[in-house]
Image 1: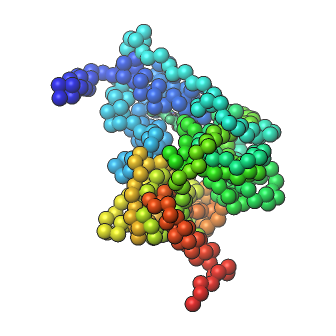
Image 2: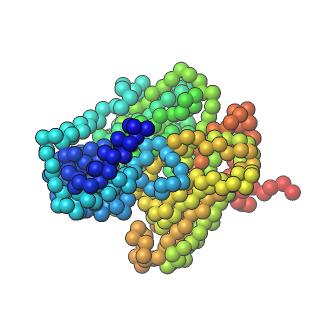
Image 3: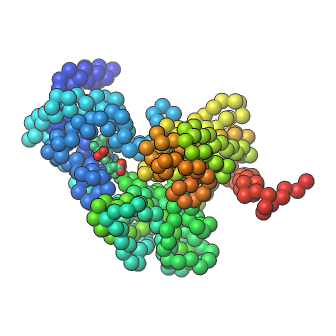
Length: 425
Ligand code: HEC
């Protein structure tokens, strides 16, 4: 109690005085911004010294107030996720007051040392490193590039994946990477442009990477089996930075001998029913799926392109209660994260999972790829739209997994439509 009082008093005192870089601002910038804002990283300038911060104090204050930086899409107050990149209201207020006071340095001798980043493997030496065989060239300008790469892994034995790290050789231009494995050996060129879909049906989703994120670590007891002979499939999003660049990425795999005792299942909601008139600022796409068994939702991955603005996902529990799963009020395709809940969300059998995505195909949407706006329909291309919400779920009783599998398969069959499948009468 005394400690709490002391903290509150100290806090009240700090609210009264003008924040300085050395005492108040550097700790925020170094812990919440410098991961992306340092030399060689994706952000356009470093924030690792007083000079860096002072030069842009006003812009920093504006962007943190509008919560554009640090980039983090889910709105506060709905779900708690791991590794949330969000400033507290106190941190934002400190930055605003500091900028308004002319960005005072304070005593720079007492400022914290700038963080040191090494781009080595975060989890130590991987058990297997898969390198892109040839460097990939990114021109200095032009549109963003979405490239799929298929790389042999030379796995002679099936393995259980415990963790994976994606490591670009050039971090200036990589905006995100999605990793999959394919064990079908259907012939495909080693790389090809791809945007909304991979152009093949992967046998395994491994996970995603975005700037500022660390390795993908599988949940306890849920190592992911990968078959001998699998090929790695990586979709990488490159953003040209004004000069020609090259990248030769690597993926590090960490294996374990521990066979999984549980499995993360992708409970995917999607709709192809998308036909948005030019100029329509509020076009709603919905989908739902009722889970036949109890699961723990451990994470969530949304997918849409540029015209989508709002992503809402929730569950209606059998008792009628609404449980939020994801609320993104201003979707930005450039920040693709795969969200993992801070604590799993229990969804009992017969929970109905619902999604509602809202699209803004008007000229007022700054991210609309068409100017003037054009009709937008479902499709995998940059000019098309998609709607997908993937609830990463672990069955509470693993022996009920087949029941979930059958229900999911039925939904897939209904979505591909009557041309392939007619339900028995
Ligand atoms: C996850 C990576 C990441 C983190 C963390 C991050 N930034 Fe950024 N920041 C970027 C990128 C990338 C850009 C370039 C614009 C874009 O792609 O959105 C950027 C751009 C900016 C800009 C310039 C925007 C413009 O209009 O020119 C400012 C200012 C900024 N960031 C401040 C911050 C501050 C302050 C923090 C911490 C509170 C922060 N950023 C945290 C990645 C990040």
